[in-house]
Structures are given as structure tokens and as C-alpha cells.
Image (tube, rainbow, N blue to C red; front, top):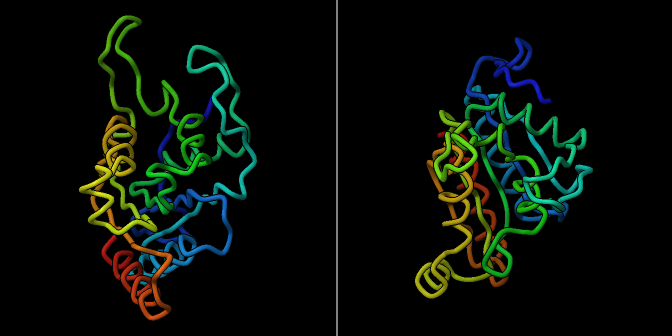
Length: 207
């Protein structure tokens, strides 16, 4: 079982806010990675400690084969992810919206890592009520979309945003502080992308 003790940053890291950045895309060298690195640079410039999880480089089965009624052992990388989440005061999730929702790898990460006893706990075997076990943490979301922001919100209803902020993070006690959209990506110019990187760095400075 993963160690549940929340520890601070090491003396070599510093004493700023403990930030864990999760890159929720299997793609390497993507705009998401550039935005995350810009945010991390801004946060570190203010003395914060930033650690990173890149899901595309981690080794784990993203499929929860038997649901939470079965015992599917966590791989080493997922046990380490739980340790890092407990270490963190602030989460930064950087990911694209695909088909109106989360990338399958990111969804699988939550399915496997945010297990009962780690992220939430039902109060008894029949209860529909649960305790939120990650309370006290905040989150920033950096989200890329090919769809324009107004269309995603008012035509599609922003399903990915509601899922992340309410039914995943909110259900476990993590309070989303800011959700920043970078959109639309496909027609964006190089100048616009550079502006987005500067915006991400400024967000990191305000972490």
C-alpha cells in the first residue's frame, strides 16, 4: 500500500509551494508540453517547487479491468504517482480535449490512481455518500482545444471541463482554481502560440 504521509519539499528543492504537474497526453513535443514547461518556468522563478508526471512516458495499464470491486495491483509508476499527489499542495493538469472529452490515457490514469481509499472513501458498503480524501489541494488546468472556446461551451456544453472540475477533482476534494483554455489550436499562428506560452508562464508565476 502506498505511503500516505504527506511530506514537504526537500531542502535542496526549496521551501516554496509544492506543485505537481501532470501531462495528460501520450504525444511528445506537443503544445501541451510547451505550455507546461512555460508554467513550470514561471512557478520556479517565484521559488515554487515543481515536479512532473508525463503519462506518455509512464508504464501502466490504463484499463481498470474489473472495476473497483476487483483487486488490480498498481504498477510501480502508479504507486509513485500516488506518492507525488500526496506530496503536492497544488496540481497542474495539462492536456488536450479529444472528441469533447479527456484523452483515454488521462482517463485511464484517473481510473487506476484515484482509487477508493486513496482519493475517496465510501462511508459504508451501502452508502451513496463518501469522504473526499484529497481535500486541501488546489488545481490549475491548462487545456488545448481545436474547437473555439465559445462553441465548446455553448454548443457542446463543455463536457470535458465539467468532468474534470466536478466529477473527478471536485469529488475527491481538489478545488479547481483556474481553467485556462488555449484555443483553437489548428488555425493558430506562431505569434499566437508564443503569446499562449507567455500567458502560461504568467499563470505559473501566480501559482
